[in-house]
Length: 172
Image 1 (cartoon, rainbow, N blue to C red):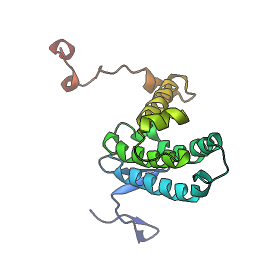
Image 2: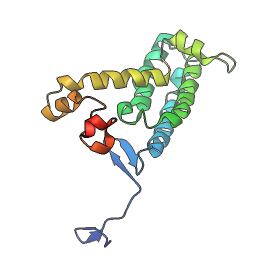
Image 3: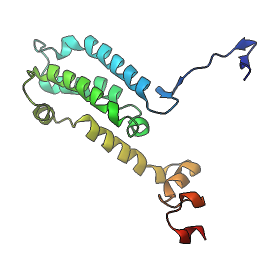
């Protein structure tokens, strides 16, 4: 295939593309996106480290607020889109979140993360992603764009193509 050109310059081929802050790859595994998220999260955590450190004069409530406002949105941005595809890489993001929560509470390594989440009243990452995705998809029928609202009405399992049908009666 001849190279595509824009204003006389060739456009290089890429294996991934950024669209609205989400990096998509060929197979929609979102591995590159999650790697970028981890890197951004660690950078922002390093910049907030003085506020979250155990010698900080901030209360735990304020440290929790800092986490919820500045760090958690990095982990959950666009999760209704990439949440299901990235289940295998979700553990890596949970580990980085645990580091930040341990820093917030000054909790040692031997304390299980379920107690840290309970103390800070922060749900684990997979539960938070499930909450955000369900609220995202529940708002589809009420969307002002007609096409999006109609897409929410389609019932799963009913397909137009005969090969996708489950029984012979659907075909004939």
